[in-house]
Amino acid sequence: MAKQVYATGRRKTSIAKVWLTPGTGKVIVNGQNLDSWLGGHEAIKLRVMQPLKLTKQEESVDIRATTLGGGYSAQADALRHGISRALVNFEENFRTIIKPHGLLTRDARKVERKKYGKKKARRSPQFSKR
Image (cartoon, rainbow, N blue to C red; front, side, top):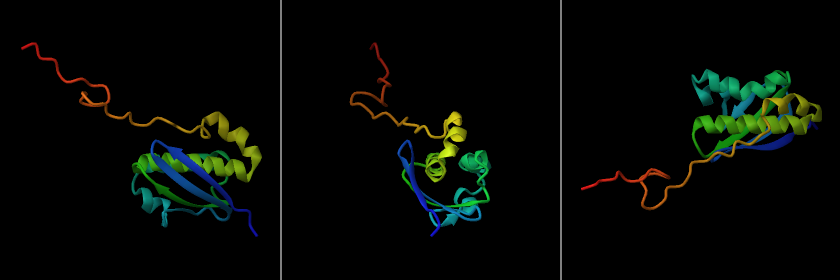
C-alpha cells in the first residue's frame, strides 16, 4: 500500500483538505484538475505549486484536495499551506526546505467584524457640525 498523507491548510475563512500520495504529479482540486479549477490565474497556480517545486516533487506525488469557504485566492493559499504540511508529514527532511520560505505559517488575518454605530469595522459616520 502506497503511503497516503493527509493535512489541512487554512487561510482567512478558507480550508483545504489535502491528501498526498506517491504518483505522477496530478493535482485534483474539488474534482477538477488545477488548470480548470483556477482558470487563467497563472500567478495563483504558481503559488499553489511552490512547495512542490521547492522540494522537487512536481512529478513524483499526486495531490487530491477539497477546498471550502472564502474566495478562490484564499482557497489557493489554503491549498498551498495544506500541500506544505502534507509534504512535511510525507518526508520530515522537507521541513528544512519549506520552513524558511514561510509556507508552514498559517496566515491568520481575517476580516474584522463590523461594530454598531460605525459604518464599517472602524469607520465612523461623517461628522456634521450643523
